[in-house]
Amino acid sequence: MYKLNDFFENSNVIVDGEFLSIGSSNSELPNTICFAVNLKHVKLANDNVNVSCIITNAAMKKFISNKKGLVVSSEPDISFGNLKYKLLSLGKLIPFNDFNIDNNIEIGERTFISEKVKIGRNVVIGKNCIIHDYSIIDDNVIIGDNVIIGCDGFYFKRNLQGVLIKLPHLGGVHIHKDAEVMTGSMIQRAHDLDFTVVGEGTKISVNCNIGHSCKIGMHNMITGNVQIAGRVKIGSYCWIGTSSTLSDSVNLGNHCEVKIGSTVIQDVSDNQVVSGNFAIPHKNNMRDFIRRGKNEA
Image (cartoon, rainbow, N blue to C red):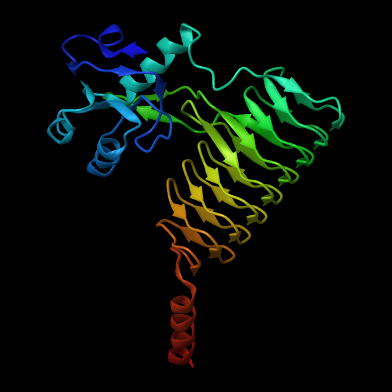
């Protein structure tokens, strides 16, 4: 366990606390430290028993539970990033160390695979692929040509002077059994000490981007050119139409359908069908489309 006072100035530590992992306000890892700078994430962190310490700003300080370790900073996100760098320099932050590549896999020409990975049986990896550190690929997964697994995502924060500061990625990617990632797609590693997850049997079509820290459930169909921003959660048995975009941190339930070319900026509940830019229930979109057609006739 690490103590806040060992990593932050005493003037910034309001309530000392202990942490073991680094993550977000909805972390599933015990003893997590996170940063929270708005009421939504403060509430999530307060209610989450896995969060033991919070970094925040002066405006949010009064909303933090007295049961949490507390650091107050004028730049909480930058302070959070600096903590990551300190722990990385100590060699403390790795998502797993059980590295192994099964002998019964097929690897295409000019494909690079890191030594810090775990790959199961009967995996097929195409040509010109890159499999980065801390990637786990379970049995019977198929990876097409020109696929990148485990690269960094777009994770920058502005400091008080407006300069963009790059924050480190700490996690990995876990692709569960029987999944398939087709030609030209990219899956970014988690930014916290966690995994971007592709669930069992999920199929990802060509030229898709899966952002950092996404959690994708089982048996989904993600069709071509779909762009999924960071921290998106998708349930199971969903269909995401071609060239759709899912905004940062949105949640899709189970058995959802996102129609072709949609832009989703809010949560979608179980069994809901949405379409449009910005996406709303598909039946409402069709009703409005028919009404406009009649008005123009």
